[in-house]
Every structure is written in structure tokens, then in C-alpha cells.
Image (cartoon, rainbow, N blue to C red; front, side, top):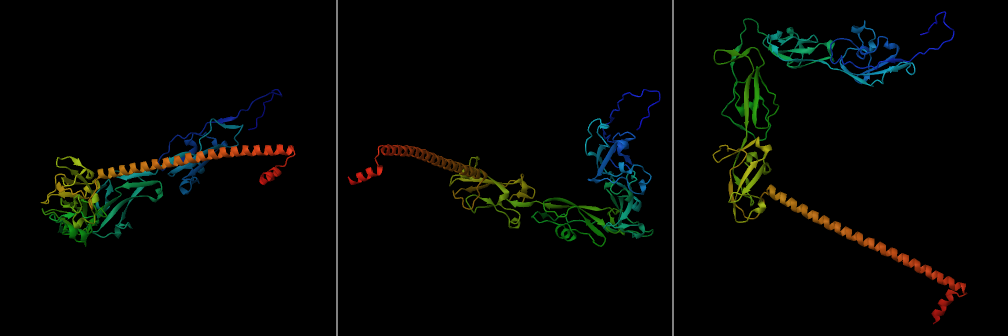
Length: 470
């Protein structure tokens, strides 16, 4: 501003105008989740009321330049460029207008200061049943509303629905709050459009499976559709005209228990509970795929016996599924390499962990063994030949150790040869150097002698000729 000096003062005097110091902006953390309110970035960072005279604010939202508040809902809001409403990842930067000697921050502000605003999240914990008017347990926040949808997700009104048919009442985010709110949990509730008065439901028998049937694991993936359930599990009482099979299992491969549900697709029917009462709730059935049974039978194609795998399991099991343990007549554990030809030994097979969940050993009567992962003991005469037999883990480890030791010796020999060759080459180089040095000295001696002869007037070539004559 321009200052006017009061009258009556001396015409000359000195004064100092100091640089203005502005407090460094610091985020107060007041906005962490969407709340349907407008938030002022200047206020959140503690800027003074006249901050626009001194400070520039630059904002990005989700990596893009922030356009400020837009739309009719914010028409009466001042300072739209520096205020926020929506959820997202904001980054805020501050700089001084004409900064330098006149304006200073008390300390250098942080760059790209994050303001992370999460969407409002509502989790549906459950529903209170009231057919098409069913509601969530508790109070539904104002950002959400109810609507009707069918199995394909098509949005319906009550006039679109047929009596006795099933639909869903669903919680959804209102259009106004898209991108700022989300919902999870039990977002849908299945209900039947009530029948008109005077129309009664038809009771039908509850579907069952044949408990006398046993389905064994065989490596095949099972899809729990009507055909499979009838063929393998003896499903009875199912009618696809007004029932459906509901399962979270898309395909069952491993042995174990699986749950399915039988559900009405029409409200014109109900279950006859057999005690004079009826119900329309889903019926849950438990399906069991039993472990494949392995008889403790042995094959002696080689000197070391192996488990004889049944033909029906050949596609999902081989002898790599077992660890074999050998003992001598005194009960001591031995390896194949320690066996002596002509002596008797015993062998047991143990299922590896990754196979134990789908297979189990049984005795000759078909009874599951106390430890279903271990076979019965089998006695055999060791012939000393190992053609077609299996080598146990200890023998393999011994062979690997011997092979590694052989490689190590070979490496040492190779390094020794290389060292010897290096010594020889080094000696040759030294000898050649000595030879060159001596030859050079001899040449210098001869040249000096010839030069002395020339000084005396004697021609070296004439001496050579005279020597030739004699």
C-alpha cells in the first residue's frame, strides 16, 4: 500500500519495511472420507483469510488437474477452484505470489501434500423379511436406496413381477453419489412375489440323495448338475420345471464333502416336511466324494516290490506317489544299497502328503487301515538285481554324493593340469628371455670386434676369404 506521511513531521527520516512471513501450510487431517459436505483446502491447511493476496494453490485429483467444484449443486459456492466435495486422491502444492524479499514462508512447504478421501462404505449385515418390502437390518444411509432386479440383473418395478415368482430386493448407490459411496455384504435379498388370496401352494416331497451310493475319487472333475447328481448320487424328487440347483462349487475334483442347495424357482410350490407342516426354504444336501481305496497288493517286476496300482486309478496315480521303507529281519531300517542278495526284507509304502487327501490304504477285507496313509508290510526275498525296481531316497542320495565327489576329483585334476601347463609356459618364457639377452650380448661383441679390425685397416670380408682358402 502507499503510505501518506502525517503533517508536522521532519522532512527526512528512515524506516524499515520488513518482509512478510506466512505460516507454512500444514494439513489438519480433517477430511478422510466422503461426507456430502464441501471442504475448503485453504482452511484445511490453516491459511489466513486474505491468503489469495499472497499464496497460489495448485491441486490435482487422481493424477489430473483439479477443475474445482462443478455443476448446479455448487452454483452458490465461492472459491470453487480451492474447495472439494468428491472422494479421491488429492495432491496439494503451495507457492508465493511474487515471493522473494517481500514474502517468505516460515519454512519450505512440502510438495504434493496428499489428501486422501475414501468413498463412504456401507456393509449390509442382513435383512428383515417382508416379501417385496423387505429391508436391511438397521438404518439405510441416505446415499443408498432399494430397487428390484431379476436373476439377470434387470431392474424391475412391482408391476413387472409375476405372482409366485422369485426376485431380488437390492441395495444400490443413488446416482447422485456414484463414485463417492459403495456397498458390500448381503446386498440382495431373494423373495417371492406373494400369491393372491385364495391361491394355495402345492406341497411336494423334499429331494433326497441315495445314501447307499458311494462315489470314490478317480481324478475326474465333477460338475454338480442334475444329470451328475442323479447318476452318481441318486438324486430323487428334483423337478427342473420349478426347482434349481445352487452351488458355489463349479467343479469338484478332490475327495471331501460338498454342499448344494435345492431351491424353488416358483412360489406355487412348497416342501412337504412329512409332519403336517410345509416350508419353502432352500433344502441343503451334502455330497461326499470318498477317498480312492488302495489294496496293499504288491508287484514284484523287479527285485524291489512296488504297490500294484488298480487299473481304474492308473490315470491319476503312479508309484511316484509313495515313499518306500525297507527293514531287515531284525527290524532295522535299510536302504536298497545295503541289502544283501538272498536275504529276506520287509517293505511298506507311505502316501506322500499331496496324495493322502485323495487315497487311503485298505486291508484284504476292504477295511481302511488304522493309518490309512501306510500300507501293510510285505516280505520279499532280495535277489540283488534291481532291474525295473525302485531306488529309495537314501540310495539316490548316496549316488548323488558319489557323483559329486567324482566331479570334484575331476575338477581338481583339471585344475592341476592347467597349473602344470602354466608353469611350463612360464619357464619357456623365462628361458627364451635369457636366450634373447645372451644373443644380444654376443651380437654386440662381434660388432665391436669388427669395428676394431676396421680401425686397424683390416677388412673382415678378406679375413673370411682367406679362411675359406685354407
